[in-house]
Structures are given as structure tokens and as C-alpha cells.
Length: 585
Image 1 (cartoon, rainbow, N blue to C red):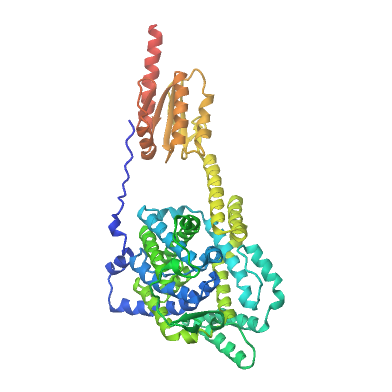
Image 2 (spheres, one colour; image 1 turned 90 degrees about the vertical axis):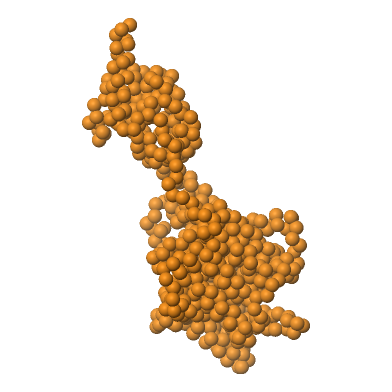
């Protein structure tokens, strides 16, 4: 009889999920030295996150302070509760292609509601232990949609980099490109000069010294250049000229000097009543935010583990990310996820625990409270240059080209499909189509490697002496719905004189319901032909499937044996008994 399959790895208790990363860091020892390292790393990451948070919020289509509030709130909540020691959470470039259309259709209130719904979905994903499923997304899918997102972000920065003044701002990428092309006559040399100068500094400063964050040099220089042009009669668009807020009846240019305060997300203009219809319309957007947030955050945690030699808890990370995204909208923050570049920066500068990410959020808060008037002088072209560099880095162009050159054609097809669908449509369509295409290709490959092979003279196991009228077949590979029927077709050619068939299943690691049905159909045909079938070497997972299906031993028809030698002995006894019975007649 096959044995019931019992998992050997226990699932940790749900109560162990929160604070998993923080507890792991403290368990290794945490003192004054680690605290100093965390504070230094947090200061550097905070300096890097400050302009990025504003630029990403602007790219989405909301005032820059909403990006800062995201970095502050998510940067406090997620790392403390999460499963990674080093994860830096905040607004990321990957979200731009999803969030921008939501803003254009539903306004900032719709964006915040969708972000809160994404948080609820992420909490459910964490509680249902779906964190490890992210690893099953094929590499060509993630590379394709990431490169596509980078392309979209880079093209959209041309508006502020060139100082264009398009007459319309459509939702879809192709229409936006057409609108930018129509506005090409409005380009301004002053904006382009500041943007290219900022981009040059962002590229050159790390080559001179990696100890100094490049934005800390490039953006102040850009602000000074914009101020100098203003003195000489040439205006350039700045955060202060583009964005305004009214605080206690007083107009404030740029970002207000206020911490993130509690708000009702649905009450922000334009007001969006929270009804079942509203939630139903925004649910696809919330699901897309949750899926991309989970993928991006867990990929970032994996990168951090590779750099630091640690291990994160993916379920704890999803749970914390969900709580952070539920909290952010109630303080004016947009959707947040793990930021790979900022996380890597923290590790390079000595991050030891989630405390460094908390310090980073406090640095952003201090900058909002102390430097808000100065920040208003930052030129929009300089922020566009910063995002242009971010888009180039996230696209991983060299790796993309390398994959196209060396990967199998099927993987290249998945990669290019995800890339073009992300650019032309959106990330959700790209990932869905990419996963379906990758799944079909995987099934085809598994069908090619899953076989039932006759053990004849050319087979390594032919040294076994089989009884007369007995054949030995070896099953190789998993029996699942992509390969089972093809593998079982080998039994249709069994001769009429065959008395015993030994089925060696030691190389079958897994079986699903389709594999079970195909095997049962083959066993039924063998029974109808009067063939005694012996299953040998059945591994735990297939044994569990067969046991649950109620597949029982039947004397003279079906028997299970632990080893091939035992199966051959059983076959010999059966053939001998059959021969004697025939002779007695």
C-alpha cells in the first residue's frame, strides 16, 4: 500500500509574522555600534529618498508632498512590522504606470481609496501565506514588465525635461507620445539645459565619489541655476511655480511645511463617495497595485538578502506592506512598496536593522518641516532628469539585450511580449499574458521530458533478469496535466501475450489529478487485457495522491512493491503460478 504524504516542514504561527525582521536583527545582537551604523545609513537614504519621493508623486500626477508623506508613513510602519531587516519602503517608479491613469480618471481621492484596497488585499495575501508564490513568476516576465515600465517612465519625463506644454494629457501611452510630439514646438532651451546638466551631475558624481549621494550635489546646483536664470529674466518651471496649497486661507507655493496629518481619503478633491459601486470600479486598480507591490517588495527583499547574506520572511513582508498601504491613504500617502535602489543604498552605507529605515523616514519628515521653502526652488526639469536616470537603471537595458541574445526562443518570446504589452497597454495585461504564455511553454517542456520508457537491451537496468512474458517500463518526470496523457500513451502498444507489467515510478516526483486519471485509465486497459500490473518505487507525493484516490491492491491485478527487486520477485511468482495453473488444466 502507498503511504500517505505528510509535509515535514511546519508552518510558523501567524503571531510570529509581525516584527519578524526587527526580531531577527535584534536576535543577532544590537548595540551602540549597530545603532550608529543605522543612523548613518538612514541619513544617506533619507537624502536620496527626498527628491525621489517628490519626483515620483509628480510623475503620478499628484502634488509632491503626497510622495513625501508616503515615504514618512510607509517608512515608519512597514520596516518595523515587516520580514526584512533592510527593506526601504516608499513610492517607487514601478507604480507610475498604474497610478497615473487612476489619478486622471478618479482624482487623488480615487487613488488613495485604491491604495487602501490594495493594502487589504496584501494583508490577505500575507495571512494566507502567499509570499513564496512570487518566486514562481518567471524571470522573463519580471524583466519584461520592468523594462517596459522603465521605457514608459523615461518617455513621460520628456515633458518636463524639454519644458513642453501639451494641450492634452491622455491616459494611454501611445496617445501621450502623440500629444508630446504635437507640443514639440513649445520646447525650451533653458529647461533642457537644466535637465541635461542635472543628468550629467547625477552620472558623474558617483564616478568621483560614491560616499556622496549624487542628488545631494546635482539638485542644489540645478536649483541655483534656475534661480540665476530667473534673475536674468528667464523663467523655468519649479515645484513652487507648478504646485500650490492653501493652508488656513493662505496660499503656499510648493510643499506645505506640515507633517502628514490625518485625512479622509474620500473627502479630498474631487470627493468620491465610498459606495459599493465605487469599490467595484476601483477593485481592478487595487488588485493591480497589490500584485505589483508584492512582486516589487519581495524582489527587493531578495536582492537585500543577496547583498547582506540574510533571509527575509515573505509572508511577514506582505502583511506589513498591506498594513502600511492601509495606513498611508489616511495621511495623504499614495501606494508604497519596497524600493530596490534605496534598499541597496542603505545596505552599502551600513544598514543593520529596520531602525535605519525609520531614521530615513524621520529625515524626510525633518526636511519637510525645515526645508519646504527651499525645496520649492527645485526645477521640474531636474526632477525629470532624476527620474530619467531611475528609469534607465530599472530597465536594465544591458541585461535585457543579453537575455534576447542568449535565452531560448520561448523565453525571448515571453520577455518581448511582456515588454511590448506593458508599453502599449499596462502592467496587468503584460503580467497576465506573460504568465499564461510562460505556463503553456512550461507545460510543453514538461511534456517533452515526462516519458514512459521500455527497459530493453539498450537500457541501463536491462541487467535485471525478468520472468517470461514480463515487461518493465520506467516513468520519468512529473505526471501532471501537461504531460500525463502523452506519457501513458506508451501502454497502448502492449502485446496481447503480456502477463505482467512492472511500472517503475521512482523518477516521478509529483502527480496531479490529470496524471491520476491518465494512470487509472492505463491500469483499467491493462486489467481488461488480463495483465498483472506492479507499481514500484512510488514516491511520497504520488503515493499520497493514489492513497486519497482509493487505489487498492488487487490480487492478480495490481500490487505495490517498494523496490524493483521485490517487484521482479513478485512477477516471477505470478508467472510461475499462472504457468502451473495452465499446466494443471
